[in-house]
Image (tube, rainbow, N blue to C red; front, side, top):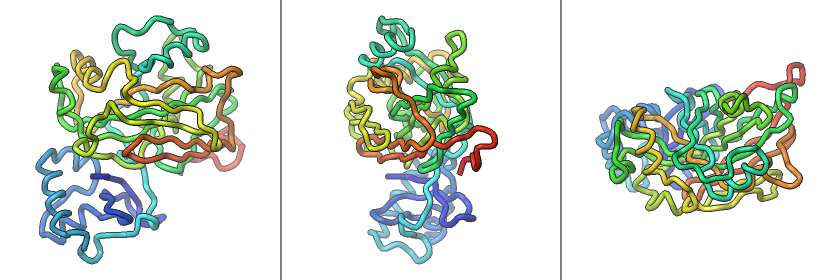
Amino acid sequence: MKLVTYRAGVEGAARLGVIAGDLVVDVAALGDSFGEEFPDTMLGLIDAGRPGLSALAAALEECEGDFPAGTATALANVRLMAPIPRPRKNIFGIGLNYLDHVAESSKALDTAPDLPREPVVFSKPPTTVVGPDEPIRHDGDITQQLDWEVELAAIIGTTATSVAREDALAHVFGYSVMIDVSARDNRRAGQWIYSKGMDSYAPFGPCIVTADEIGDPQALDLWLSVNGVEKQRSNTAKMLFKIDELIADLTRGITLEPGDIIATGTPEGVGAGRDPQEWLWPGDVVVAGVQGIGTLRHPVIDARPGAGKSGIG
């Protein structure tokens, strides 16, 4: 299933939906039509576990594309939001997880040239998240080196503690697209959270594709362009630490809970690694995608105080 969080109108409340062709089917309304209570938020559906997903899948199958009145809206007529608009916890970011990105980072960002022996982990606060078409904020008083990174995001479905690698993927609810926006000139004594954790620095969406529909998460193309010019293109097969390894490593000491998000790293092609270096500026448009999931499009806006409308949304 392709699951979304959406608004049917400017003032409408956020709703949980499932994409069916060119329609968005409202999950809670569909449940009402069957006399059942279905979750009305993405986190609620994740919390419902396999029984919740199975009940939803059964209802969709029974409809056979003929959805009860009031349950479906044209996808073109809704506004998609981040699938989880407000994560419960910080996003787990993974640095230096593609071979060629390790090489370009060591040249441009003074990171170690040797391949990491274990995953490099940082975090992004919940306030970094923005949904499709929402702006990436560029505050020129803070950064002159705003950079892009396309990533596959893995969303945890069940509590995971000290998980063996062979069992790790069973804890994944689904996958999405994330752009790890980074202010390269705001790294502080080797710490990345301020550089990567400012408001709007985690564009996320446009949907979550449930894990059963992603045959192999390590065989997905991913790409990113700026102003129509391709900057990154690779495949998740090139990750140094695969998703099952990341989950096994993290859960050695940190319990992963339903709704937790892992941004699994970016391939080569970031702005800092280019010669000459390239950065994002107000007026730029970033588009990123992952095979089988979808694409994100985000304008970059001037967020300096007094620069005009600088809010998110």
